[in-house]
Image (cartoon, rainbow, N blue to C red; front, side):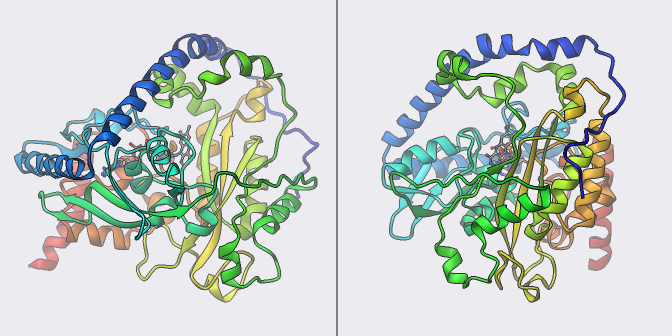
Length: 473
Ligand SMILES: Cc1cc2nc3c(=O)[nH]c(=O)nc-3n(C[C@H](O)[C@H](O)[C@H](O)COP(=O)(O)OP(=O)(O)OC[C@H]3O[C@@H](n4cnc5c(N)ncnc54)[C@H](O)[C@@H]3O)c2cc1C
């Protein structure tokens, strides 16, 4: 068991220029990033209003025209001359922390920037049909006035439907509805060759809606104890141990967000009064004003990682994070992982349903996202901390414990370990079936840390194609 009182002392680290740039970064954030963020948010708000004023018919017509432009653009590509296909979205605009290095190599851009309209809200079918750049702020403002919300609303306004479906999305209601992608009812996708199919550019999605009320009751239950005891109390708060009926579990609307907090080190009342109304800063602007050295500093000295672990392993995960990183507060968010007829890249533990563990049902295993986002205690104490090594060990722990690392974060996984963590079989089958190989980059290369050469990626694509051609022969 981990002793929380005993600090894990490491040697002291020498300070350099970047330490001071980071220390005084608040000046840029408060006086430049925050005011500009407010202007951008206001501009986006006007754009959303303008879109909402158009009739559904007009939005659908514009959508059809935009899809035709994507199809035309894909057909213009010469596979021998042009690079692999990517969206034209600039890496700093996306919320994720990856460097998106693949966009620095030669690539063939397809502009999806027109896809930012809510196409339809069908109250009878309880679905919203939206384009991929519709973000959480926009859709929430639109549906709330109808007493409706997406079943899983990711917290940050800037997160887009396309990114949450193709990347990863989770929130406090995920213990009922699963990940954001589990709430998708239908997708419209343009394939590599310009046909509409299932693996390619997402151009619209129908997403499940749920009814909402104006207020909700929140219960705050402080818990003291060891990390294992806190993990158990967390599990008890939404999934009773005595094997509640599946139907009853579904009716529970409790949202569980727990934090293990260190003593606060500043009084935020004044800052809140002065600047709180400007919050939050746009993540894209924070990224754009960072520069390479500060970005690398954060990679080395901060942790921004999520661990998707089976519920019964949360205690072990907390102890692991304490020993390796000592990052607090931690975010715990339960989510279901559904048993599907096919083995997708992320899947529950085989045979989990026979163990009848807390939170599990016959059709889904209960997982938890352990969110680790902050400076480790060693960094705060001015000691040496190797962020890359710590993340590498975290990934190994995840692989050994049937757990996953969302790939919006910076990953240290090599190719072999990537495919030990994620199942490749169905993914590769679909990539070949729908002609994605040789046009869209494999997800491992998209996620891989550091620059990759076009040759390296093309060779990897060719290696995947070879056995496929051999099969045909
Ligand atoms: C500060 C911060 C806060 C966060 N908060 C939350 C949170 O509250 N809840 C949560 O669930 N997650 C959160 N995340 C993680 C976030 O959900 C992921 O980073 C998400 O994938 C990013 O969404 P995005 O809209 O920026 O998409 P992008 O990063 O642009 O896209 C993600 C992936 O989807 C692909 N993609 C996007 N659109 C399309 C399309 N139309 N067709 C095909 N592929 C496409 C992209 O190529 C990329 O690989 C947070 C991350 C950070 C850094």
